[in-house]
Image (cartoon, rainbow, N blue to C red):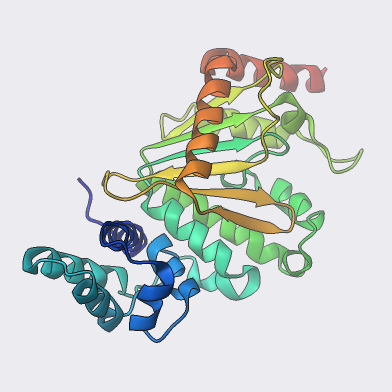
Length: 287
């Protein structure tokens, strides 16, 4: 098992603190009183989205009457969760906000990633020219002012995904492959780059949902699910919108999107046929 990083440690610690609180029959409001804080503070701590205070964790463990062994192990985990490191994404936080940091941290520590991207090519597989036009047309005003930084960010993402992620499954559609921001934009470099990335023998897997199934499944948004090498770390999820990211906080939400991905992945073209589909698109554009 890989060494637990700060982000995964926060999620594991949060899940265990929630379990202890619920087992003790203590509400979030009651736990918040111990920390002289709000229920929102407890919620952020239990969801793993904030760095924990060591004293706060110690106080909660005593309140929940954790035994000595569990107290020591969770306090040690809290120290990992509270640690700061010079992470690659820190250069982009000011431009793109804290949610970019949170998602990048999850991506860097994840063992496997599922990404359903039905509208455009996923950011981690975009060429610089493609990233530029995507960010030019996003509804997020800040990103339009930082296009060069956005291109640098996507390049850095790809580098760290290739270095750390074991499996990155991409589910997309013909609509995403055909998307053009203007009549003059040439999609062929992006499509050729996509083929090259998927056939390079790295972590990327590609499947194309060529026809949407008429079986009652709602059309999915752009979403990602992150799972970790440590099974005690809860999975995480994000919806990606033109104006930013939306974290999937509840386990039921993550389970829903995980199941949707699994169903659609099985319905999609095989990887071999998906690559043939992209090759065919390039040939038609060349002719």
